[in-house]
Image 1: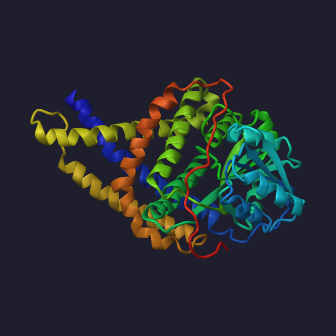
Image 2: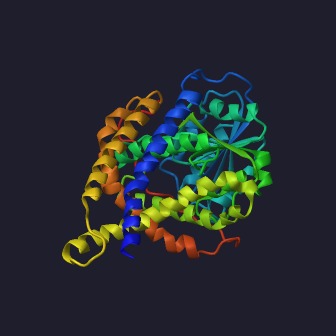
Image 3: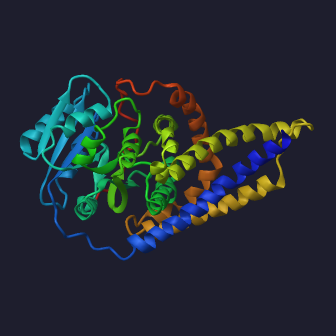
Length: 417
């Protein structure tokens, strides 16, 4: 028993260290082979696009985000906003905007049915083959559509493309930590997974889909709390290709309170666990073997979060009870120091890569020191709390996953350019 506990402790020490090295090297390889040389905005064919946005109680931001959509550098596109049973002035604002802008159409659901239902309703009103979904609190870069669409025009098996979210509000330490996370963790992971050939998720904040692929997988599932993770796996299991496009930028507002961040990450974690439950049957088919590494890595990350919290409890007890099998060892202290250095190195590499898109990214460099110190503990707590909901919720029943407008920060200075 004691030997098993020691092996588990070694897993907790070295799993994040090994994965950080993999993500850093994979991100660099992606940058060198697919990203570095191609800087000019694609000028090839630009088929018409439908931009689809689901909104619920977004009166504070909906006017500015929708207005920004009509400043894009793209020849032909329409915008459909689905108001999902808002109880504030969201629908009134959109109705007034649609009267002045012929490219904007409003679809209104009288009751709050959930984001997946809203997207499914909106996509049925779309006129074009390429569907770009964007969150209601996000600002799309002027050239983003050109970078997204090129994957569809060059490869008929491309089912979805995900963009590169950049944090817009950075006035608090929590927001700056998330800025570092989006580059050094999320961005590097997506680059590495692209090298593997499969992605865990196309981020719901900005994603483009081929309408034929959506029809093939029966659109977004209404029983999942994270429709973006769920549809990514549905597409890949049907052999549609999914790509990451770092040059398709979208500026997002992130939570600046612990409560808001907790609610967001609890939903993300639960959605990831639900996807593991839904897709375990991939191991019964060799044809689905290309998804095995992605599944196992995601499963390992959940196990690591549980074990990390257990060891955080065991170590203090070990210092008080001499016979306790798990004690704080020099390896733990050494491993923590090395891990912090690797984390800083990973973010340094991410800054070098992403600074071409976000010139102010380097200012958040030293905020990343808090990621392995406090942010890990926060995310591990979220994962453990999400486990019961993700493991024991009912799957497969057509019950809508309702949503509410999340807590998020706002721009306090400067202008979006």
